Length: 296
Image (tube, rainbow, N blue to C red; front, side, top):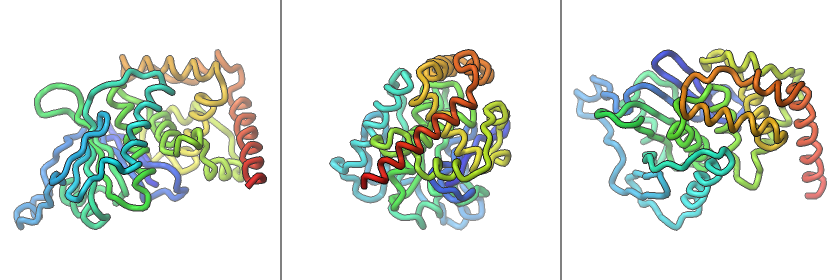
């Protein structure tokens, strides 16, 4: 899936499990959430409307669609549980900030809408958009995607971004993406991305958190950086109690400031050799994966 790009005015995130550099989700921040549609299309009377014939409130999400939304669908309960999972694991306060989710019935209608309302953007399966409301208040948080084979993964990923940005001033690129990739997986996976793990083991790869923390635009990142972001997040949340403490404290700082400084220095105090800790954690995960495959 696609990842995230950032400029001084626009932030774009790209999502997770695919190893390709394109196709997936994309997120925009600090831009208008309700942009004017493409003028030529608007003048021709071809502007696709925003979905809204049906709506459904689930937790702090409000789903809008032009097809029937079944409240008892297992996905909606899982997404409600995702909110509780993110709040619990990251020790963030729950909020009532509405996250608006626009669901299209198929990819064609979704792409037609995005092409007109957000012209010039590349094709992606899903978007998260955060921008100022027209009259004061907190950012408006919007998610766009379509009901396809990857809707579960895409919604978990994008809603993780939205949940983080509903309580934090900002989230550094690598951490935002690493957390979204961690939580986009089914809860029973415990954040273990087998594809990322296998690819990291095949590569002649050396972790470099300092380099990751300097990246502010998606063009600086390759799929390897996204795998590394996931790996660091997994180490901090599941592999190192001292590292987890550092991460949770950092997230609390992000609630108050968009510029808390780099994480690496604080992590090195808690873990004298973070790179060795990460390598050992990946080896431990690989062994656990081998045991699971051997038992199947």
